[in-house]
Length: 323
Image (cartoon, rainbow, N blue to C red; front, side, top):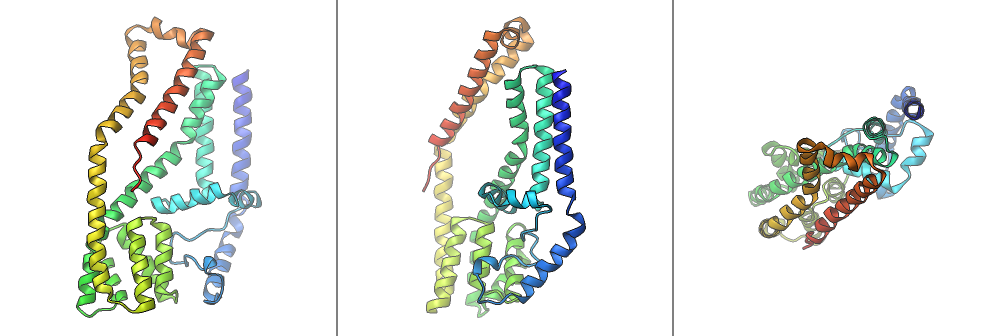
């Protein structure tokens, strides 16, 4: 009976979410047309924070599809989630991701109620499954930023060679777009498109820095701003910057190698209780069954899961090195 009630509530929540998501489909084209017209007619004297991401940029902000989602969108948490999606290269609306999370949460809750019948364990499984999209986005974001950082020193060398050959900075960026693969190609292509449509190059680079929050790229943006203000030799600055970026990457690799054993120890400590419990469940099920059937065993299992999660994240926090 409890399972039927929970399933009914979950179905009602899903129905409401689908109604909210689909309520603005008829007005989506009008929103896109209005946003494009606003971008074309906006002058350079307006608020710089509002001048962001033209129609050609797939990472532009899209209007939410209902008043409720618009109100929720004002929360900083969802704004950070949208930025993480851009940085990960996942180009979808926040409402769609929230719908996926709700579906995963409901599936985890139903599976937990069927397997264990305990509300706390069911909620824990539901929270874990609901967080899977966030984990995927964080993984994609980290991998994409790492790929961009590895390409950046070679891109700086090519920019330096282009400037020393007498080409302009925009021409050097065009060469980068032709010679490099994603993700560097797509980001610099967006910069060129924004500059072609009238956005100042330093501003376009600032917008790219929001999409790719890398410290090494921030050094390039600062160098371009200094050159545009004081007129120094940009080729020499970029050449020196390339050496600095390679030094920072070597330092990061050394730090990662020196902390690899401790990170592996943290992973073993976090996964060992789970593996031992799984092994006992297969070898001697009666030893592990008491943790799921006896009330005291259930309390012990909940406490062990909580302490294991706290220990795992504590070790990760201790091993984090800021440089």
